[in-house]
Each structure stands twice: as structure tokens, then as C-alpha cells.
Image 1 (cartoon, rainbow, N blue to C red):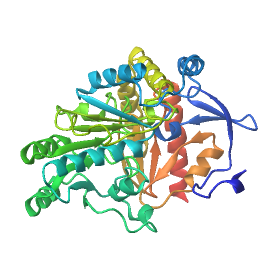
Image 2 (tube, helix red, strand yellow):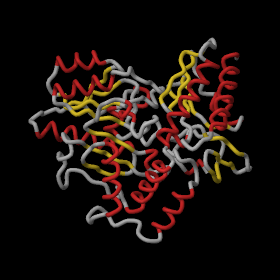
Image 3 (tube, rainbow, N blue to C red):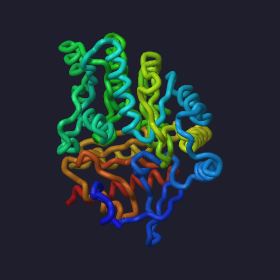
Image 4 (tube, one colour):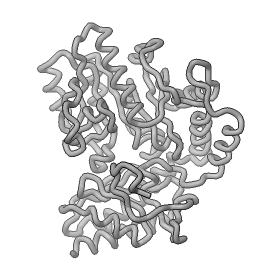
Length: 391
């Protein structure tokens, strides 16, 4: 009962009892089509049999030993993620915020090692990197920062998708050590930057000796139509953070580092009691197996093209629709007015979605949906949006 928990969430009046694939069922036995995936977490849907079997088998063998000892499954998970990303070293934790904390510490430690007294990281407006004090300070959202001052120093916020703003910062100060950006802003409203944005950031970081750090917590694990969203461009970051879809519902995060950052941490510089446990690593390895076997990066790209095209065709010219945008299965419909109540209307219609930035309907469906289910989501969202705009 909610009276026993802190009121940190504005919960909808529904409780789910079980799920299968892209569907969830509530206590009354009603079925819902999940177009949110636990906020980009359950990319392989609910109760995936291979993941359930891996959890059961590993739970009967070994759950936890701590990182005082070698963890074979963790080492295998690191190897496979590094093979896919082109990076060199991995640190495992339990969430996206923790992964971003590790990235922030990496950048600061590298700066300190180079004699920079106040290492500074350039971040962007409308970004979201987590709710710990460091990641909240990096986040570009004054509304969720309110009440938690003093925030941590060491961050400079610039507009998203604005390379010139970053160039101005670099021209005026010499303590910048890294850029931290999302390849596509999720919480900020499914904001997709210009095609040359990440390549230009890569070039700037190379020119100034900075770390290019990409928060792929929401965009990673095939959701964008590639394993990682930066792979839509001919670049590689120096640091990348992952979580959400990496565990398909089981808590795990990762901070991957390339040549410039892989050797920054030494023993005692960072750690996590539960990070990369045998169970968490086994689950993530199983997720990788299923994503590979199903060629889900290609599938997400095809589904995203299908859904984005249909949404643009049916809503693009509707009065009150500002923009329909997305990449892979990260889709957003921006309206010219607040639309938070559409979430409850969708729930009543048997569809799960959410609204971010007050005016953007966000769709993050599981990668396992069929073409017919993708069409069902589009049809339902189009109907809900039209009725909302008609008043």
C-alpha cells in the first residue's frame, strides 16, 4: 500500500501481476500493450523465457561474492561489450545514475592527474543523467533540481545540438576535461540532434584533448537501430554508459572506457558492492545472446522506420502537433500544449506510454513487438492525440 512508501512517484491507479512479451496484465485480469517498456528497460519484453531460465539457474549456483575476487561471468560480459563497442575497459554497477557517476569521476580524476585543479565537464540543457547529487548537477532540468541546492560545481550547461556554444566555452576557459551528452535526449523530449553533431563533438574532443562521454543508458542495447546510438556515425566515444536495456529489468549498469580513460582508475578509486555480480552478469550475457540471435538492432531500425513514418503521415499535418521525431524505437510526438493527462487516457484504452517535458508523448516499445502490434500502438496514439487536440 502506498501509505508505507515515500511519495516520490506519481503512480497511476494500476498494479500489474504478470506479463508476457509486450503485454502486461493487472489485478483485474485486463491486458495492456506496453509501449514504454518500463522506460526503455524491457527491450525484450516481459517474462522472456531465456532470461527467466538464466535467473533461476544462476540463483541456484551463485548470487554474490563481491569484487574482492574474480568474477568469471563479469569478465565475459566485459569482453563482449568491449568487442561490440570498440572500447577497452568496463566498470559494472547497478543503474544508469551509477554508471554516469563513474564517468564523471573518471573525467575528474583524469583532469586532476593532469594538474587541473577544478576539472569541468560540459553538459547540455534538457539532459537527464540521474538523480544522485553529481548526476543531478549534470542534468539540464531546473525543475527536478529544485530543492536540492547547493548542487555540485564543475558543470557548464550549453544548449543541446549547439556545437558553437561548446566552442565558445572552450575558447573562454581551460579547465574543461570532458563533454557528457546523450546521443538522443530521452527525458528531454526525444530530441534527435543534427547528423553532424556527434562527429563534430568527436573532432572538438580530439582537438582539445577532452573525453567524449556518451550517456547511452536509454539509447543503448539496440533501441536506436544500432547496438549503440553513436554507431549511426563513424565515431567512437572515450566513455559510454549503459543500464536499462542491459538487464531487461534486472538492475545492472556499465561504464565503458576507451584508450584515453581505460587506465585512469586504480585500486580504491571507485567501486560497487553489488556491481557485476554473478547473477547480474549472467542476466546481461543472456540479454546479449537474445539480442544477437534475433538481430534486434536491425529489427528496431525497421520498426522505428515503420512507426515514425506512420505517425508522421497521420499526425504531421494535424493542427497542434509541433513535431514527430525519433530514432529507432525512441519516438516522440511534441504537441503545442501540455498533455500529461493523455497518459491516463491511454491507460484506460489499454496502452502504456508516458509524457516527458510536459508536451512530448514518448513511445519506447519493446523490440519484440510484431508489425501488427506496432501498427496497433500507432493507431491508438493517433486516436488519443487527435481527441486530445480536439479538446
